[in-house]
Image 1 (cartoon, one colour):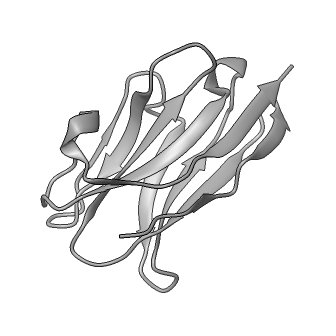
Image 2: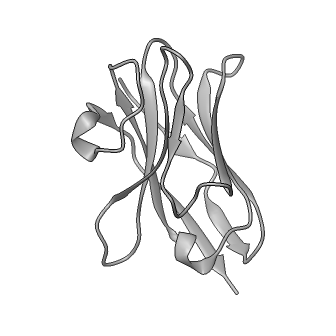
Length: 119
């Protein structure tokens, strides 16, 4: 599975961005992020079986993950962005039906897209 994340950019604190990952079918998709000098961490995921979602505490209430079946994408709507959201964002695919917060739960990874939030 080839994945491509898009939609990154440079924004100001409080702004919004929408990331997209071209992915479709019976796959669950996760978004992870990696800030400079830090490990890659889980941000959000959506399962294909029930459409269930999961979020990290740091993004819950601000980010929303969803499927766009018309465009065959999984999108991450990011609102109220903060400087600490600055990172390279990656989408990843797992063949299980439920979302996972673990990096090793995903079998394919796309190239990341950079999000920079400045004050």
